[in-house]
Length: 231
Image (tube, rainbow, N blue to C red; front, top):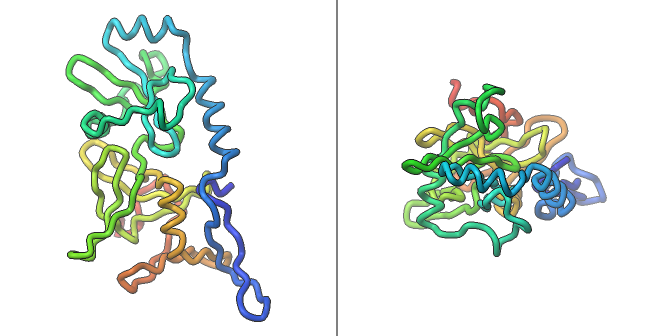
């Protein structure tokens, strides 16, 4: 399933079908609905949130578009998302893996990420990754490209740090800042934009033909760091 968009074969001269493919539309609505339904099942009772709020423990959800919500918010849409730039910058700037996530007996071990804020502790689940790239910006003066996260952090776009997951079919870019090191999801409309520069191939690695004139193979393993970092 190609979650960030449907891939189609491209017909070229003479009716021949090329081996390249491209994204033709944004994130499938059916996948978005499924993710929303799955998240609804994870919402706990009002007593859970009220009880733990007294101890200043709060619970959040990040959707496939990088929007942040209190976990028990229903419905989840742009109107009900948390939008304060200052809050989001602080929240995602302090994001880190939950050190007790692997301990089945630890409180809140089912929340893979946390974001401490003084005496408060924020616990986070994500539909995919907690860090989501929501914009791609070009600085004409320096000819530099940056991906902007849902926490407003600017990450230099590196053609060799791009990857497509064979599991989700989504597009990701490596991120390494502060306490988070991982492949982070690229929002669907940004993935569509980037896909215009990707030659999707059946007989070899997908190729990114970037603005610098270079041609870069796109990784398909998001469980490990980009090959360029291992060399």
